[in-house]
Length: 178
Image (cartoon, rainbow, N blue to C red; front, side):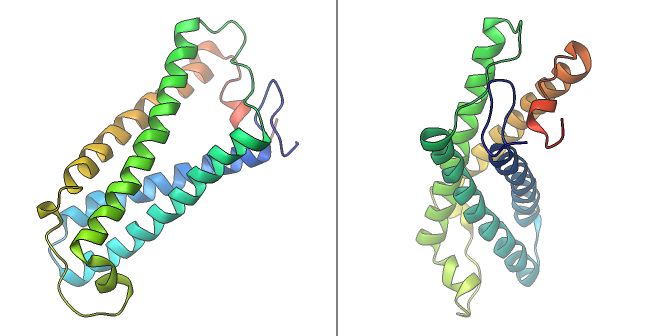
């Protein structure tokens, strides 16, 4: 397996970034929804530390992925025989992933900056966590989380459809062993 993608499959760099990003997104969604429901301040702070750190990691992975596609690699061709509408839908979903992820990172950073939560969580400064709902970036952050869940459902559903119904090898192209 090569580092770079071929016309038929993704390379190890693209695959690694994809699956690391997938794991981080699951951690972010779980910790974000969990933090919203936690009443205990210490537990909420611990969860938000994980959430914020994972958010920065996802930003790095996303920027690395964009740089990789722009400067170092090319994406494989769509699976043979794929209808044009499916190819366009797949491109739209992938583009929306980038837009939503970058928007979520921006709104998350905005909430931390506006609320002063960063020093409370990471700087050792005392104080109680703010009510994040009073800060404008909270609304797009919450909406983005739900949109991200919907995009994940569509993305996973399409991958499983290709794998089990079409049996066209699309899912295998995004795994390490072939």
